[in-house]
Length: 249
Ligand SMILES: Nc1ncnc2c1ncn2[C@@H]1O[C@H](COP(=O)(O)OP(=O)(O)O)[C@@H](O)[C@H]1O
Ligand SMILES: [Mg+2]
Figure (cartoon, rainbow, N blue to C red):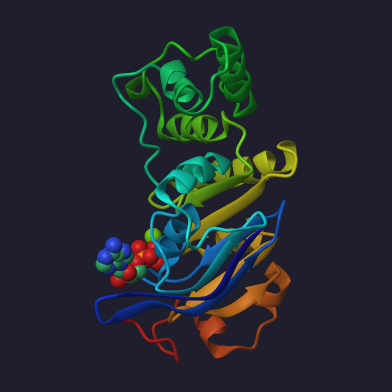
């Protein structure tokens, strides 16, 4: 679904993505893991067309997006739902107004149909009948669910999660990981891409894992491939130990 072919990206003299080849399968849950600063968010920004490669090619859903125009990217971004670390809801808007936002932005759907879609998607994330509440009245977990509802409302083909559980308590984290699985199962054909520095969560939730290290893929494969890998950098990332071949910048 998403292919990076020899993508290189530098900021000044620092090369963040170094001839990177990434292949994200359609319809599955893929985790992109790596320690902080390894270029995970930079990778997601390339997928969204918010950053552009210095070299190489990016193909998404059969289309080469590398040299898209501004207008092409605007259209293209409708394929995506995004959930960031902070759910980033508008506090001055109700839950319903927050969730309807992408429909107003991107579609010409009649209002009654929009309202129906909003209620459906809130029900899907387990929050029916809270449309009239304000974000400040919600728990952290509920805010995340509303953020997810907003990401799903316009029926994206690809949903991107950037560190969705970072800074959350373990129960909320687990709930979010379960929601990621539920969404991927219930929304037909959706491709889920999750960025995480938490390899444990990846092992529990992912179908495919891409481990970034020094601007390249150190290992890509199933959770089992990771559990059984003898690669010293992979083992060190697992153990969370400072001693080992992995360089901490
Ligand atoms: N727009 C930018 N300009 C300059 N440096 C950047 C920019 N975006 C990211 N970087 C740098 O690239 C590196 C990777 O960042 P990032 O992808 O955010 O890491 P992470 O893997 O933690 O998500 C970091 O050193 C960051 O400072
Ligand atoms: Mg990041």
